[in-house]
Length: 101
Image 1 (spheres, helix red, strand yellow):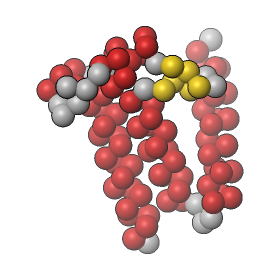
Image 2 (cartoon, one colour):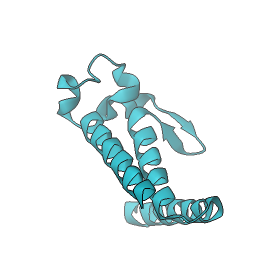
Image 3 (cartoon, one colour):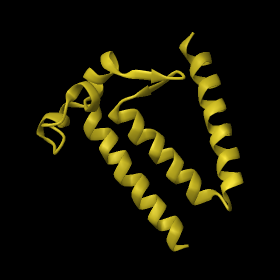
Image 4 (cartoon, helix red, strand yellow):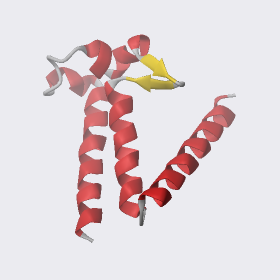
């Protein structure tokens, strides 16, 4: 049980990081001295490198880690964690493409 609580706390921290990186709060945060081309979502989308379609910037790293930690909290072993990760990514990508049209 303690592992689940730790995972939820880490996920909440990562979600707070995402919110700071996404909006104008970035300029008054601890990230303000960091390179906005990587950390500030409103700027980083122009510069982010893609790795297999996945954008490599601060916001996407924080989001991916948040999802991984939440799935790890729900998984009973690493195989289940991998299966849930695949299911998450497939569902996200299909839904994103359907909603984008």
